[in-house]
Length: 385
Length: 82
Image (cartoon, rainbow over all chains, first blue to last red; front, side, top):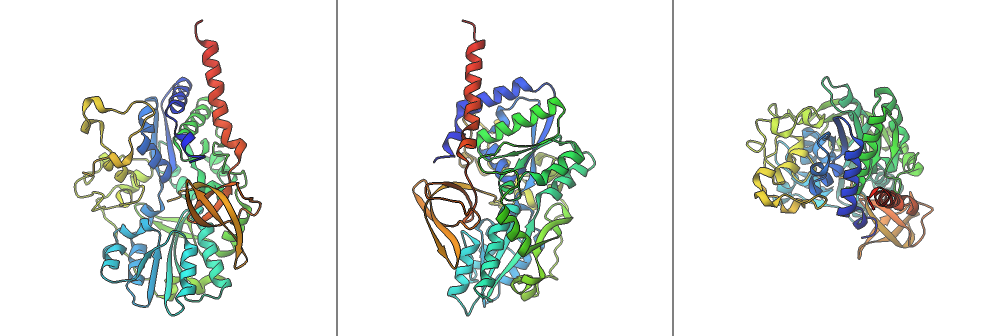
């Protein structure tokens, strides 16, 4: 496919890796913020072709993984109601809450449906005027415009049977929390490319200045990731701390003005609880009072459902880049992709624990089967252990 | 989750006063909201996330990394012992 295949070329990847090796003179720890980037790094083995000086740590950017356990429980409570058609992106259906996941609920007869787009849920509301249509509105800034558009359209079309359970999260407060953590090792960031198609690069300038860290807004294909690392390493070696845009084919400096205006109209910033991390002030979106008629939390009175998360799990430290999955006593034992204890192992999410658990480690592979440079291990060949 | 797939706009239309389109992803066609890329023309490429176009793909920017890689090849040739 155009704009995908050419960015997966193994020889070009080798050249970029060589350029990184020529540029780097000492160890640097770089965090890729977005779960989609982590997925590409693990799937194509980007971490294995980088010089040993460059350590990639994986950030908190998987909205499925960081959705608080109590939000899953609220979704479960709403979806259990016989008058409700509960709509969600497919990723969320297998995330276990304390009373099971939404897929199990569907198997028990609840009307839970996977939608490709929040706008499909709006059309479902028009087609089913006697039912309550609830959409589970999760995501980072990337998903805020489509979710806001769904609410805006429902109000415009007077579809009062449409509501949203909002659990939106924002990237900059999470990056700030990571940089303020005692023991933080992150010296530079690969910024979240698709988030920046919406908000632009400007939003990251204050973080780069305040914490003196380079932030390179980066795409999602192997060549994007490698070029993002090259630019970050170059800045670190030269002592610069700037926001640069590697993903210029999709990201404009000021983002998408129409999307920003719609977000501003429908949502306001609120405190948000992150699975594995806890409450981060001013780190999420909620509906503005003018749109509260479409707020499922109020309509179905589920806001008082509170849930305690696992005490063993160290996913909070993993999300902040302070620990690795193998540091966790539960990794691969009590905590597996089928029985996740915390955010980073959540099934179908892009959590690091899960991605690593699904990838054969060098120890598990036959000695002669290590992948050649640039040809990377597809995730599907991983053994689920 | 923040998946964005590049696709080619093959048709545009309005529905409930919102700009929509048919977008092709390697032979698969999807209905996509184009309201936030109002300058879009048929045959343009857009980055689509959950049925919603986030931005138009800039052709010149898309070629940039390959120009850089081409430049590296030329440097290698200059540096290679003759």
